Length: 413
Image (cartoon, one colour):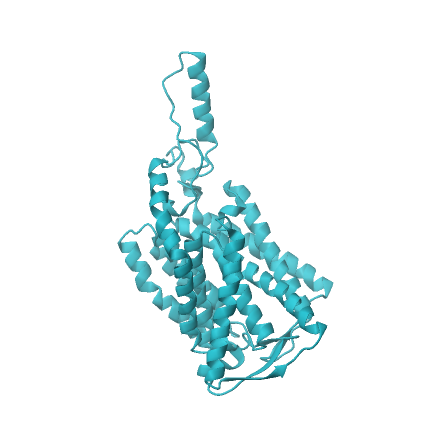
């Protein structure tokens, strides 16, 4: 998965170091030792060399695994995926033994239990954290480097919450105005309102952490530092092929459409050798993966899969604009909470047990979304564009103002 894209990697704080002529004094000897130690401790290479220089071509076998940024992205990806699925098998086995998560009832309107959802999503978060922590040790990085660091994480998370709930509310209002969703009062009363509101808030916070952690943290970071267009194209083809082979998959054309829409922009960036090419190729791959991963849900349609993949692109853009994944986590959690608990609509064929409002989707499923819920309606497409616009208005100028400073620091460093 080479060549790697050095512009996507985190900057190292290790100063440049060069070996001088043989020392002629104690001071010179100490300086030479310091320079040698600096080269040995450079976390981005893993072999003896000054920071920022290409690997020393001493052992061809080493160069197969080690690049300018340390362990090559392809190997990192293979190790992470193996760790994730290995941990998933172990943790899911332990969860099944506990009998905490009830089995899904057959049918396209299976009920989601808050406790079962919390356990399942917390298990997923644990898998990602463990796999990322191990990779951080192998790559000699911090786990925060995987799109978790950045300015004002709580403020960005809070802003994402507000935008996510408001965007979903605009979509529901449009559906109600068009007669495609009807409400018939409250489904809860008394203390149940607060009880289920809190339980589903925790559950959907964990959903946001798991799904954004999987698609927009380690994978996005690693693919961005080592992906070119041709590798990205191959991965997209594989992802679409695997989804196609699943007999339970539905809405596949939504994933195919995102795959096709990403083809020309990513190829153009590759031909122009744009510094951002690696990031947007990684966005293409992870977004197709995110959409294809939803095709096994029981109530999906092609618009729902397209919206899942499309919002993946928006959330990747949020990582680039805000510097971290926390805005996306907040937006994702608030959208799901509003959809499943507050408005009581279906979500990919599932209904939340303990939702606040009684709602019914009616009319043409192209507009209502049917069993897929609001995110399966064609009206979700302008809603996603509205979210992207809000993101650009909130953070686009800040990034533009910071760009010259970052460029100057890179040139000086």
